[in-house]
Length: 334
Ligand code: TXA
Ligand code: MG
Image (cartoon, rainbow, N blue to C red; front, side, top):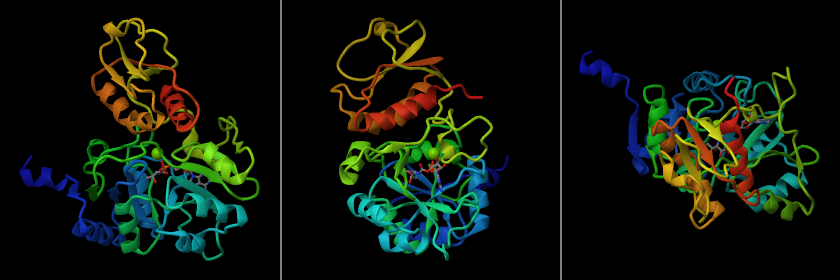
């Protein structure tokens, strides 16, 4: 194939800078698809008001369009234009925005987010990211930007620009490289119309939300009912965040031919025979473990492990989100 043709398939990648943010904003306003860092994971952005761009986004990810997207905005003022805040939502926004919390709210009457992005629901998921590059980009675009994680649907979420490139090169217009992300798991999603309901554990621990609410958080049923083709948070379908390798949870020993995803200082029986070992946090720190989770799953997968054995990980703090992602990584893929 002539070089010009192969070059045409490459996605442009820019180091984060004022010029890169300006180029990314122009591309988004033009209906393009741009991957950019947030504090949680890399997102794949499209203009939330442009149905054509959103359709291309679903196609680039291979994502079913009944799975709605999160609208990202620069601040609570912009958020109020698209979602209806009750007193509880206002309190949560004041406590956690900007940051890794997504609120699902009733749409305002003149909400500009396209129906295709919200899968026809009368609610909209809204997030105000804290990352300075995301903030600058959203302010430059001046419109809500929908952004799912920048990976092929069902794959492990990306925490570096290289992960995005591996999944989406040639399928999107631009990648802004802002280095590795800080949090490493996606935002916590809270349904906030009536009693708040935890839809997805994530970067803000449930305990922190409960401290603000002053009550224990209700949780959605763990899995959608059989035959329910539009569950409340369809991204929570059983198999998600999945490496090619099988994933075996709560491992108390390593079997022959397994790679080991370790946690904490203790050695596991059989670990010396593991095909590869990566420790999420040797000192048992859940924040550090969240940062490493998706990158280490990708790295062990690349080492052609048939099965990744995962040590038990505590469920408190960010452990709730880590265990949620691991459970989905381990779920049967069909
Ligand atoms: O941290 C994050 O949230 C990242 C970064 C890029 O911001 N984004 C992200 O998006 O994780 P995504 O598309 O991978 O996950 C969005 C989740 C899906 O599970 C979707 O079903 C749910 O949000 N969701 C979106 N709109 C919803 C709505 N109106 N009601 C219930 N769930 C909704
Ligand atoms: Mg995702």
